[in-house]
Length: 84
Image (cartoon, rainbow, N blue to C red; front, side, top):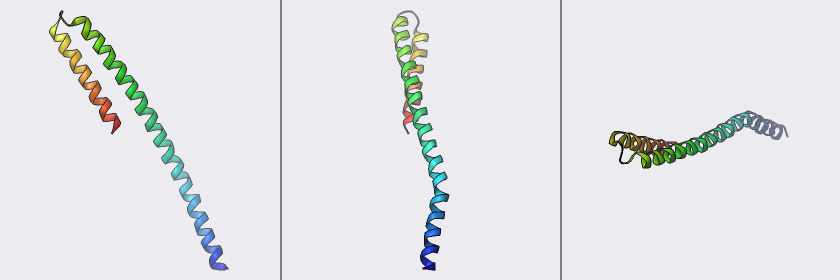
């Protein structure tokens, strides 16, 4: 009877100690998911804008075209890094 009560108290104490940790881990996971979605949306926006700008400058300035290619490449790399 005493052992049963002690076991119950230990289990209850364990749950009470783990509950806040589990809460903070779940909040951090949610925060990271939200950040990942925002980052992906922003990098998609940057890529699309750079593609549109590139279409406008194709024949006018090779340096600008190269810079836009670099922007697109960096945005795609950032997007992939965010998925990891």
